[in-house]
Length: 213
Image (tube, rainbow, N blue to C red; front, side, top):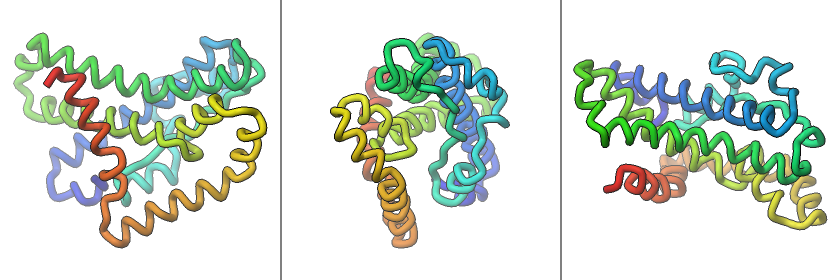
């Protein structure tokens, strides 16, 4: 849901804004720490190995979040040649780290719920925040696995195709991105929940799987 559509409910608005801030921050930090673990110090030198949200926020990504209901963080700079295991495999591992951290966040919240620790939370906003962060974390993970640049799924796709195919796909990177976001904008103006139709079912499946429902 776009943040501006949630403005009529102050508690939900704050919970949604905070959840996206946390989810995007840990997502990008996951990329940065994964790159460092694989041998590339570039994210650390650029100040991206941090849980401070400010270095991770992207102006256009934040604007899209407010208006369209989805957003993204500032891409983490990585030098593929420094990664252990080779550039393609290394970049794939760095790419999957972001969605993986989001899913781990959702799993952690589910564990708190299953163990009854959330039951002891008397602060109503805290409960709303945890429930919202659970949903946002899963949605952000699934959204980023769409194989379209600049999302993580695109980097993963390149790791599973041959070199010539990867080269041709990279050559069309900008065109693919423009078409993708053009379709999303068109769906928005037509009031058609395209992203909800695409990522909603797998997100609901994963949520039920994590919760054991």
